[in-house]
Length: 209
Image 1: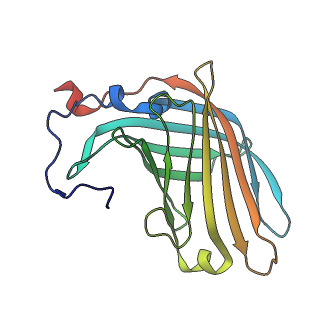
Image 2 (image 1 turned 180 degrees about the vertical axis):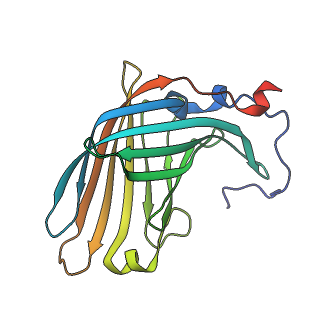
Image 3 (image 1 turned 90 degrees about the vertical axis):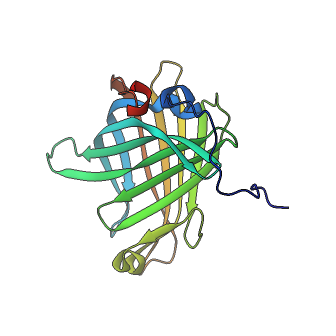
């Protein structure tokens, strides 16, 4: 028996337009954040450690539907620099989505090196820790890379764990498994940081009507 309804066209009625009130575990992430103690363990001829400074903006979007499916979410943009250099070290855009009816979490991401991913997880509405993941080759939580990255730095899996701290900050651990051309063993690419809020989120447009 399918977990999905037979009627795939009819949208929910009486949708609450207030995204911030319906984000479940994502509510704690809404706003503008800064982290000054990021750590990146990245590949090269030998593993390399890089400290970084991060700014993340996560703003609520209007409710989204796929027929009967209803998502509340955040649009985000991440900009990362090295402590001693002004140029962009990493840039990422995407969405965090929460489906209240099922507890499904989705993170979409795109980076300007020619790579995208859709990562999926599950969490309760009041969860203080959650995880999403993506796997190369999956059609529902997959990873897509440009031809050179697929040739030289193939991404086989991605995991992102988020923890909401008691003081209102949140931290993450990102683990990406890479198959690097010419190296026998997989490489575990790790990023981690703790974020402090520097501005509150802007309510989604529909909630202000």
